[in-house]
Image (tube, rainbow, N blue to C red; front, side, top):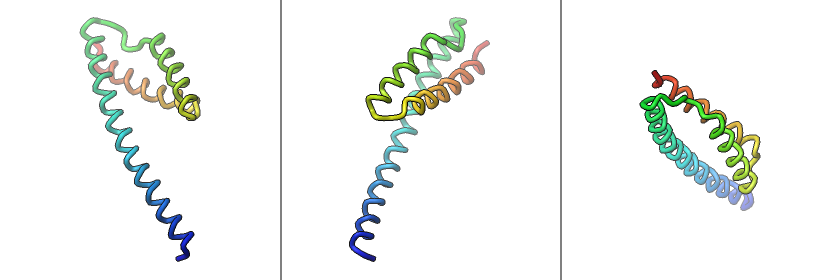
Length: 98
């Protein structure tokens, strides 16, 4: 193994370690987020509020797209990601909505 190949293998290992750590952060962050959205769903069900809030959802998408641009992340990806999460949350709210 050449020095360059050895260095590349070392850098690859470092990147993968960072990716693994970030994946854990994402999973635990999403779990925390869903705990809050479950509480919101419970409140909505208790007070006969609709499971979906289109105005809030569009504001959140715009906000996430702005943050994505600031973070040098594709805003369309951020929008799709948030739409996926919102869809999951709404489905959960509908299950618990009378």
